[in-house]
Image (cartoon, rainbow, N blue to C red):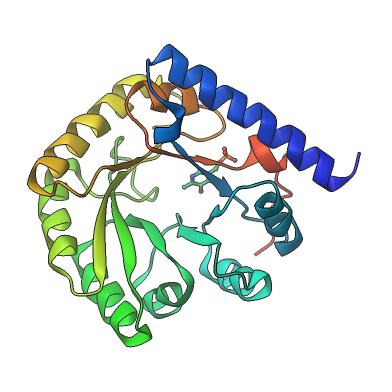
Length: 231
Ligand SMILES: *Cc1c(COP(=O)(O)O)cnc(C)c1O
């Protein structure tokens, strides 16, 4: 099987899961965007998925994402930065990222906004919420989310998109995605344009769809098992 055929098969399976998950949740699959998480896979794979009709691509490390965006060099691709964001990476991320899903601290609003403004670009930002209080996995405390969202909405070159979360490890993701949905509703009430809910990965996208996910971030179910990351 060629790589293109492998990716086509992976994509068909993921699309099928999204349709079934939407049917079970009584939702229209047109309301769900698949973000193909290409981390550790080469730019050639990104080109192949675009040929298969996927234009939303996720990356979690700036260095890799920046290089891949430069290599793919196709303005039709929407790059989603989904990894831990650091202040000193904002300048770089703002140059290629159309979406940042992982903003979780007030100082990042300032840094990312300044970077996007300097680059003459706009960036849609999701506030990442921590659903399990485990330090090191990223995400703002739920209580801090409304104020962070307000700050993003007020920033000059940032658009508030909504909220993002990663389900807690080793637990039923349903209750966590339920809490995320409540927070998303509170954010959307204050900011009617901010309706994105980025939730669900290869292992738990059906649960996320039950709780209103609008963007599922799928890596391994589409691209295959990731090679171990060498840093
Ligand atoms: C890697 C990653 C994903 C995709 O994970 P899979 O289990 O491979 O689908 C989704 N979200 C984030 C934040 C990631 O880092």
